[in-house]
Amino acid sequence: MSDALKHECGIAVIRLLKPLEYYKEKYGSAFYGVNKMYLMMEKQHNRGQDGAGFASIKLDTKPGERYISRVRSVAQQPIQDIFGKINERVNNELTAHPEYANNVALQKKHIPYIGEVLLGHVRYGTFGKNSVESVHPFLRQNNWMHRNLIMAGNFNMTNVKELFANLIQLGQHPKEYTDTITIMEKIGHFLDDAVSKIYKDLKKEGYNKREASPLIAERLKVAKILRRAAKNWDGGYAMAGLIGHGDSFVLRDPAGIRPAYYYKDDEIVVVASERPVIQTVFNVNFEDVKELDPGQAIIIKKSGEVSFKQILEPLERKSCSFERIYFSRGSDAEIYQERKTLGKLLMPKVLEAINNDTKNTVFSYIPNTAETSFFGMIETAEAYINKKKTNTILKGQRSLSAEKVTEILSERARIEKIAIKDVKLRTFITEDSSRDDLVAHVYDVTYGVIKPEDNLVIIDDSIVRGTTLKMSILKMLDRLNPKKIIVVSSAPQIRYPDCYGIDMANLESLVAFRAALSLLKDANKYHIVEDVYNKCISQTDLDDKHVQNFVKEIYDPFTDEEISDKISELLSDESINAKVRIIFQSVENLHKACPDHLGDWYFTGNYPTVGGNRVVNRAFINFFEGNNERAY
Ligand SMILES: NC(=O)CC[C@H](N)C(=O)O
Image 1 (cartoon, rainbow, N blue to C red):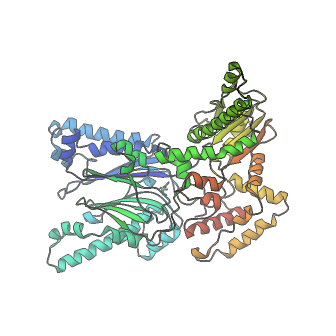
Image 2: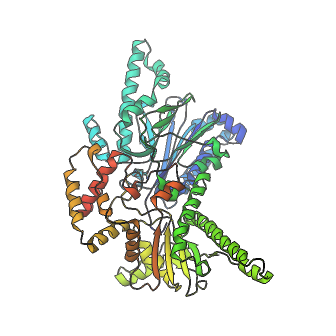
Image 3: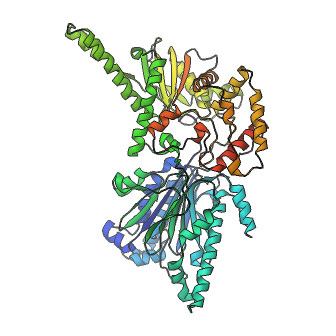
């Protein structure tokens, strides 16, 4: 990925089903859960580097004993930072009290962080600031154990404003306007309600307050609370929560936009945003890790009982294809194949662009995420070359000399490491021209492998704004003097904003949108822009379910090719000598490569929830009015 993109978050839940002594006995430490959590977060660090947080709950503590711990950080290396703090605290306690060393009961009683229910989160902020207050897990504290709620999520709601207003209508006074607090308070409201109802019933049945407490834990129906709380949520989410007495849950959005995977056996239950994390950290097989169904919650009661409850009516499944193209680690068995297929499917267009001249073409990739699709592309290039070799040999009708055959066989796809990503460069001087020169050096290149008659094919996973491509990559590649530079995007053209966890909230920064506007100008059809604006304005008061995506009309007059060619033009200025061509994946081929992950709204404008249409409508109005506001 050459464009920096804010995206994603990663969640991790661990529930230890056995007493802590069991883990000490079997794995040598009662901190087994904390250690595993560290690994799960570290292996999801790709999903969030703005901040990280950890929380845990100890089951069955006595009144007056601390049972909730939490630590959060926005340091440079936030995961290292929080586990550094945890380690220090634990080690200090163990040194000061040698008697704790082999006594799990004392460890649990006196040392924080150790616990049976653990929650971890890595964050890329999509809402609000990057201060430590915005880092998950969030805590809603109460003197009643059952009313404590801890939450963390990978999510984005399109209707936070409305949800926030609802809370105020419920008589609440949220301490902050952030999306995570809004969601947590909503659940918290129904949690409070459920707890007091159960308590009332118990009182009627003759239990006193003290006797009631464990029974509340037993009777609390988490599914019912989630059903009431999530009724009006519109967005993509995997929300994880812990309740003070030890119940925990993860709820996934009804279109399955954001990912959630789980594993369970008789020792543990774990949930994470990515499957291979669980496979690696717990050494389990692919088949043993399951995906949480859209609209479902996995609920783990304090008792250890695990259930799967359909909380919301599932919508048409639209799991985010960007997870497959770029966000998730490519080590997932399925994602790896999907990325390779994306590369393979692009090859026919590439061969056409190089006139099948594989001899004079060098293939390369933008590090790091485009590597897998590059392997796919190369497999197909090699297959093509082999076919060519076979044909030449067959044409020779057995009269070719051994030398000639060896020569024919020696042709290979020319694979080179061309682009090198350097560390983020600081720009010292704000004066324009010198700054551009520094920006150009974000990428570097390998010299000496490209000949002037060569085509240079370079694959990237996606092109969002195209800024880095224009300002750095193309300029650097052009220094190698190739005849032609062909940039291949394993994702289709990004035409519409996202509002489900990726921060692409405005239209005009998308290079595909700018290309369409430019084509409209060229074709004397710019009036369409105003027509679309008027249509958008006419929808502002409509209920979400009646709003349509009229922004599609901006793209309608043009073929994909026309837009791709315009993007090539926009991204290559006069300073570039080589001919530049940009090839995008087609949406059809994307679906072929990732048949189970059809969420494609950023490419097609077909939003998976009704709120998406409202967001794109607002984004267009903002663009037209020159308004810098977020669209949701
Ligand atoms: N990327 C995410 O999932 C972000 C979660 C949440 N919206 C936040 O900003 O903290």
